[in-house]
Amino acid sequence: ISPSRGGGSYLPWSVRPECPIRVTTGSVSISSTLDISMASSAGTRLRDLVPPLVECSWVASQTKAVRILDASWYLPTAGRNPREEFSALGHLPDARFFDLDRIPDHMLPTPAEFAAWASELELRNDSHVVLYDTAGSSFSAPRAWWTFRALGHERVSVLAGGMNRWTQLEYPLETGPGQCASSSASPSYDEQPAVPGMVYGYEQVLRLVRDAQERGSSSRTVVDARPAGRFTGADPEPRPGIPSGHMPGSISLPFSELRVADPHGGQYEVLNSAEGLSKVLSKTLGADYRERPWVTSCGSGLTAAVVTFALHLTGAPVPPLYDGSWTEYAQQPSSLIERTCPE
Image (cartoon, rainbow, N blue to C red; front, top):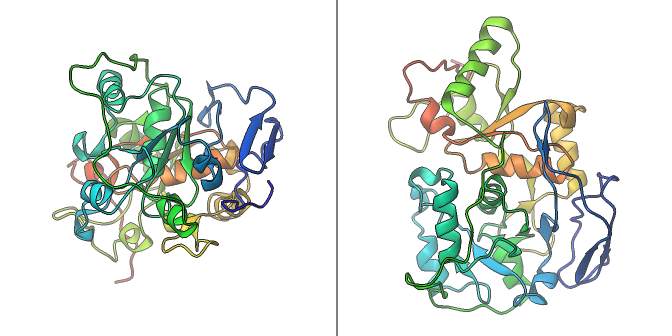
């Protein structure tokens, strides 16, 4: 990848020689079809028709050819309203706001709900969607990426560095609510089936946990993206009434370990390079992590997608994401919970 105004060290396929591409300043050319989406024992291998990560310089030259969505989200304790910030503080040109709270607890919508939502955002099934957030595109944007991929939309990318890098590089912003289709407009997006194997429910995860505790192993291992203190039980959960701790047999991989300081000087941390991500994943999950079966989880299903996205960027099959995550799991009376913090 050639250095450019919006350049960086992101080359998602650098560890995937089976996916030949040609990358030049400001553009990406795919010289052949990338790997075919299919299920395996480790997870779902997704087909990439567009780069999973795109640079600011490329998006700035393509704003009329792509659909840009702001997928910012914050915990209630942050005291921030991303929709209000979208309108008042600015957003990328021609962007729409992708409200992760549209579905309660930002759970995965049904295919019908997603098709209606996409039509409101004036998306088509062949739209190249570019997602970003205001936290370096390393917090909530990966959750939106996973939502699109889980519901069969293949042409979706995440803006490397997010809005913070965009403004750091002095690209323009717009204010206002952004334009969306009127309620009387004809639907522009056709419903399509969800991709099998992309999401797990409570009973599936509980079965894994019981197997891990009773037999010492299970068919998949849960990777927990919450901060380490919440995993061990030393720190409280941010949601009232929910105990901290972890599922027996799970592995702690805080999503923050997959982020680094923005090399462009942005305020927020950004996703590490593909090489850096591989090192972190190998250290925590094992050198053979690309061949092992995982399930990602977190507090509410949001930052689990950061781990999922990192696995995809480094050439691993995409594992199921436990959509209810710890918020659902810890409230069920039949759940098994461990705490490993010092007394």
